[in-house]
Image (cartoon, rainbow, N blue to C red):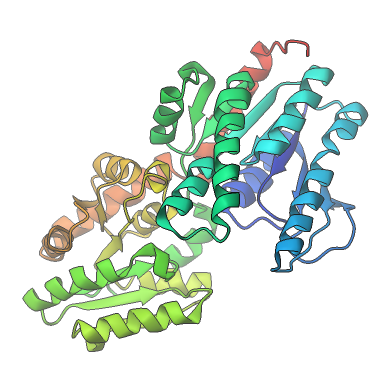
Length: 412
């Protein structure tokens, strides 16, 4: 039996983690292989002091949390996080870790890199989202809550992350091939970057797949996801209006809710203005299995991903979930979405244009049953082979094992 690999992970995700690449890939799949993982995280709920508790295959050092919305409360929250992340020095003295990995936290990465170098342990960074660019983008768009603070933070994080930290990391993991290209453009060596896209929790989704489902309605389209106004889903409603003009029997199923109830009201209002309110069903938030069951009622799934210099490097999970459940998809041009549709052969790619998106949807709706079934099966098998978290975990394991064999950590 292989000796367990001990890792210490510091992540921006609050405990308990909700993102699937943390919750499923690391907490579940990697721990089930030969990894014993400890975590440094901040509590999601209010917590007046740091605690240590069992979690998964190891422990979590849980930092205090102030959930207030005032400026002072936000400062305390960040101070609690940094204070908790400083515990990396004590942990590396106490435990013989094989590696340290920091996810999406610049200050924590600086602390971890220093501690790891002193301990002679490899230090990795996982970048799932370009957070320095996002701070600056929010300032340019006029949506930053504290513009001056966001401007300073964005420039500081950009310098610290891309000029200081990532060039010194033993390896960098990113969430898409586009993000890898972006980092190479910043001067990070390509041979020290590995891309791992978001995956699908096949075990959870298999339940929805195996349950009896109504046959897909020939004229139903579906969108599954958050209904936040920032996602620009009025674009989808305008594209559907064009579909409905050609196929009056077409129906759009909108599955999901929003933290802000006004967002859903706004979308309903937009559907009414466009004259398609009677053809659009808003389900609101549904239990996950029920949402997936409803999704399978559709003939075509929609994955509109609003173009943005920040989101172009993202790896949307929704598209892979559509394909696993056997629903061909129409998606707009986007580095990762375009790559998935081309590789799987299950759907259509269109420009971010209502007419083009509608035309692609109409093409998929026009497929005969045989062509549609063949496309559906291609997509499902591609996801199983390339985007299940079992497959991703095996590939990630191979990279880490190889890195540990080759690691040589310079002294401080």
